[in-house]
Image 1 (tube, one colour):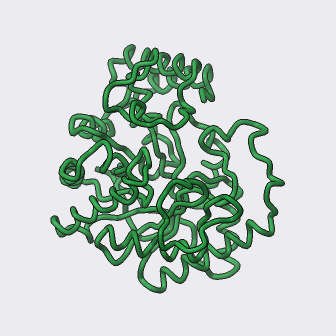
Image 2 (cartoon, rainbow, N blue to C red; image 1 turned 60 degrees about the vertical axis):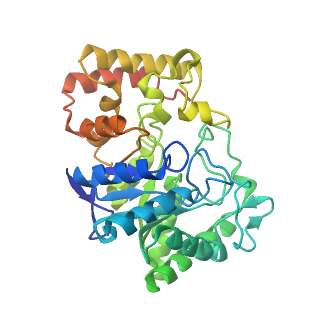
Length: 358
């Protein structure tokens, strides 16, 4: 296992991060514990979770994944061996139980503000059975964001909010994170599903006011969704912000198991009733293109996809997930696969044909 610095911290994280969002929905507690045991045996020291999980999110599964991680810490005694990342839910998710969170709304939209972040961190610490989080992240911005199909031109009306209001919310978030660091509840701050403007704004405000530096961003990134290149990727590379790809297999689509409308029993797409932004005709053609490349070179398409993320010089650690031990073992071993130059050339050819499938 290889390791990289997390942003400008002194923390070394494994280049593979264990994602957890299926535990408590598609996976039982014992299965989650088994995955963590195996991951640690393979040298993984970086776990990512969230108060929102398990996924698909329901009122019943809310917080369950953190509870499963917490019982593993209690049983294994390995809390201090793990770099633990979790997230506070931001805008959206009105169906989630935010009891005790106080005034969570701006208009009809849920947001992450001081009151709610402070309540969320305490609830997460209780579920995780720990007294500190290594990397505490905003799950999504308070403002409209360009993720989950909102990256198409014309989708976002920037006049929906004012720059002054956004700067005020950014400053409140950073002030809150600073207080959490001082209290020993968190070590570092990161975000998810955000933009180059947000990254540079957080950096500027932190420098101006001596507040915690943003250390990471996790965005969706895979063969199927590379729109963070070259703009956000340049910010991460130049400013030493850890880029942590989530859904490197496009929700499992790259495996080909959802082609032609297939929905294997127990799979995420069979369980999730929310609109599926990935299920397009162009996506189907794109998956077939990458499967052809893998077959041509004698590779497993999922392993090819995971190792591709590893080869990007702006990627710090790739977040993997699995619902079975066979999947987990295959995903971890993917990072030992070599992608020759002719493989990367063929991957690039498919990308140029299908640059934005969804």
